Image: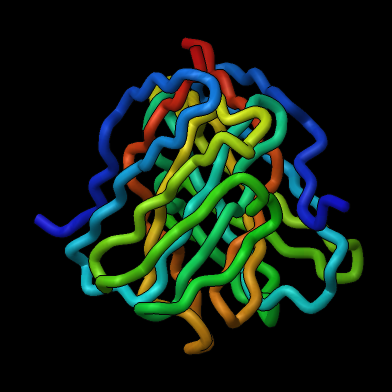
Length: 111
Length: 116
């Protein structure tokens, strides 16, 4: 039973446009949600997080939106750059710190 | 510089053999984790440890074992009982557990294990 789901395995966007990556979850008790970026043969790197009591968090080109009623969060990247091409993982966490990851979405930003 | 070191980067194992993956961190983090990455399945938790001399099973612990004798080290042994061990293994650590805020884990660069 997958508690965190990323239903789109891949996404392709043009450089300069917006990239929107989506994530759904089933457990309403999650306290935090996070996004990670991963290049091949490397460990994931932390991008941005959001507390369950907020609905938006912004950091430069990256914004995460949380819709608790729909159990849905999304990561917006504006403007998208070729260097953003990577696998993006959504993750959810309880206050205990254990992270549960989604399957990942591969983003390709075309020049 | 502080960080997490996983070694080796590539590892080949014959069927029926046990193999141990190393994970060392100098971040003074209390909690350490092992994940496995397979195509299309994201990162799945194998084992985690929130304090020295204590560890818990994750979602896919069968065929694996760990130890946490030192705060800095959390080695993972892939035993011959693991039916499909070929995967990319990631170690992570964090200081934020049970403290009300999770800024994220610090990950190592991973070990690619291949059974030959």
